[in-house]
Length: 133
Ligand code: ZN
Image (cartoon, rainbow, N blue to C red):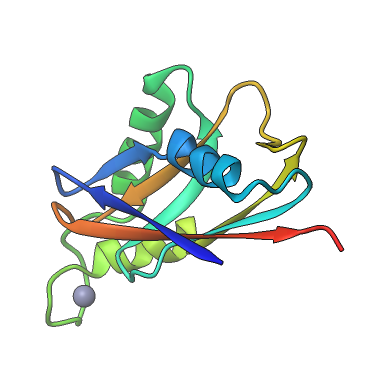
């Protein structure tokens, strides 16, 4: 079973909290114990898990990403979005979360963020839940 979440980003760089969308899929699956895979099928967007309580954390991460990988630089890629590809490589395309008692086993302050690096666009996130054998 694979479910997908549609994410509509509104700016070039944006971290979207998708925790409740993923949790909803876990709940609907009826699976109480297992593993949840969250996969982003894009080359200029990724997914990360980090603090969801204070929005400054995500803001600071974006500032750091931009400092580390500027939009303009010694890039050859014709599309002009090499920074977005590199930032995506750093964030990665997937996360794995333990499902326990029918819920994502995230820490108190953890949230799942879709990381847009080349928006605004219509994006997708695939979610697969594997039940314990
Ligand atoms: Zn490109």
